[in-house]
Image: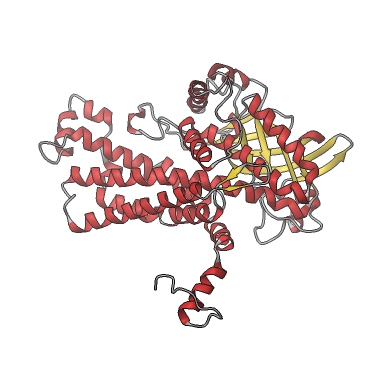
Length: 466
């Protein structure tokens, strides 16, 4: 296992990463990106305390529903970088299972990479979303053929790829880029049916970073994003050579969608798990600020919080169903149930903005106008600010102010905006989740039940509770 310090040292490998127009020579000491690097290092050190026989607890694959549940809990505690790594490796494990019949020649390569990454305790990020160009056109019909990552040269020992992958969380902080097709490909699009694992410091890889990290000296006013934030990477492959042993798919258009579907399952499980916890936090904040405002017994406020509670409970129930009804692949790995994973992720994302609206309605405008912590400490205005931020004798002005800062940071500032977009887009948009949910729902059984109720079934059985 790597230590946090060893991880930080591993980033000094010549990688080409950029932030706000300048190349970042030292990620560890960078004023904006450096604290996020330290978060990853802290995650490494925490995982070392959970090691089993000297191996990272991220190693191995889940072989039972309980094992899967334990892994999900573990990666959330270990932080974003552990999450994206585990998601990437389980995506490959899932893809290997699904490719065993259609493209078996890649299975050994995939398994070898997963085992090596786990053995060396590497961090891996998933690169899936292409620049895409004109969304109404397929990859082969684009004005710029590089709008989707493609093979531009084939050699005896590998291929050269060109293109870009967008929205890649923590791309600059990992060791490997799991690069996969973003969609199904058609005949004639063989060059776009390319999947590979590429070192972050490979010649030609260039990463532009954006971040919601707060740009304030006093991070006390940012209790969420000030503690943990990660950049999004705009990953450019500027004629990058990929050796044969790192190619996981090359030209098999009929198998191109396997990787995207595999990633979607694990990305949506991670999103569902995060939403389950996050929904409880929104309920808690709504109740706390209602109490601080003296509105916790008002009918419409109680009704809004009740709706938030129902939402949180349904999302949590879908997560529990996805884990409890886990399915086993041909190699013995356990995967979350696709029906409940997708239905839960859709429900959580589709209703998130309404839950935030309820929270804002309950809390009030001070979400975005409350004075800073430094203002409360100012000798001239601090006492007055605390006085007028109080609501009654048992509600301290600083306490209420800090609640407002938390609500703003979580739902109404840079991180809050990132969260709203990410909830919808991570793991594919809402429409994709509806498609997969419908695919895995037993519609035939539902039709059969309806026919029995209507007395139209050939063999009428029990009414099914009606």
